[in-house]
Image (cartoon, rainbow over all chains, first blue to last red; front, side, top):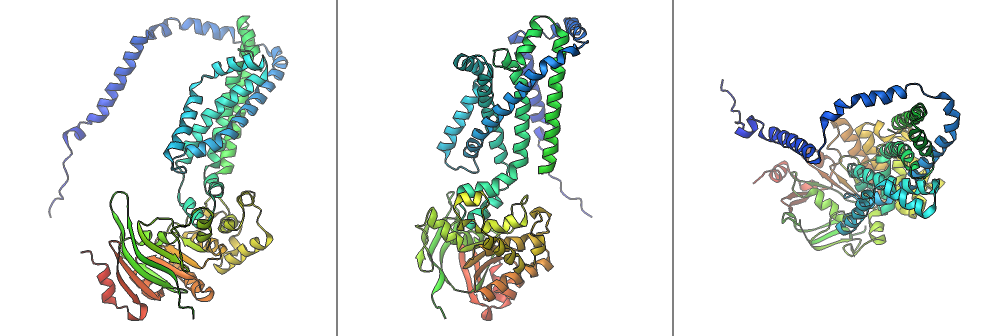
Length: 264
Length: 250
């Protein structure tokens, strides 16, 4: 019996030069950037008691505060739903036009992606400040900010999903003589629907949190109350707000899990 | 009998952008109502040849005519109307897996509707009935409301044939329709194609790599090698020795 000839691994394969090299580079970059930006990791541990102190002061949630924040919390959720929905409606056509497997015209795709990059570049706080200046203090500014923020985020998530679909059904619909829109409707949408829903709800969850921050700038919702409780050092009220938010996020998460299972 | 060929290749060449030759000087006619089987090794150009007929692939030179009309000038609406009369069956069935059988079959009819009606699912009662009759021909009416991904491979291919029937096609192109199927379902699917050919007079062009199947079903066998037609005979004249030659590499 002859032994089968096994190909020799090269020297770099045997010593995993690539893996080791990338790891070393990554560690060097991390250490380097913390040095250059002056981040003092030690301070995190030496000042840890400040943090525990804060936790202690939040440890007795002021439950009597709950009825007061129900209404603004409600408003926050409404803002988030409105903003996410408006953003998604505009994101879908952009996502289709940005997907490389649907649009073969590089120029069109390039321009669409440039627009999307630009939208994602604008920080939501800047947008909120601008829209508060335009529409005045209130939830209109908040909704528009969230809509633009969702649009940027969802269109990117969506076109990346579209690019992973099975192209077979599209070929079949093309061979049937279907128009472009019909092809997308019949062969693309069913393949991505459950991921669309899950990304939509994820964005909604982010928006519920974001809208609390926007409240700082006067863009309505529960953020106003969060800011008030913090500036009054009334941490037991802050704790109630955070717990209320947690409940909302958990509910969205539950709905998301359920819908994904149903739509699979 | 109609002597005019339904499809005609004249000096057709296809060269891919990277310089690979896809098709080399193809010249032949396909008479109306023929069951033509194209055989050849993988990469011989069978799929390319098939897809030039419904313009899923473009040719580099020459001309293909269907019912005496050159097809190279079609675009937009006229191209969609060309594709409507040419059904296509694929190796991987290409059904929309998360949709029901009914929706998959009806999707074969969309070219008869304006886009907005297709999108809103506004199919006429007559067409819903047509879908049931199409499923009847492939023996799958009981699966009407089943999701496509719950069906076996053979069943999926039969749904794909029903989808094609919705187009009311004059030609059916089948690209390796049984390559993913077991021997038993292979016979079922090939039998259905043969029946459509004989009962409805649909011209059927099938790519196969099984010589035995080709001999069993074809009226005529065309052999491709390196993009060129190296063999073309009526089934009565085909010999085993001929076919082994097509599959020789050099």
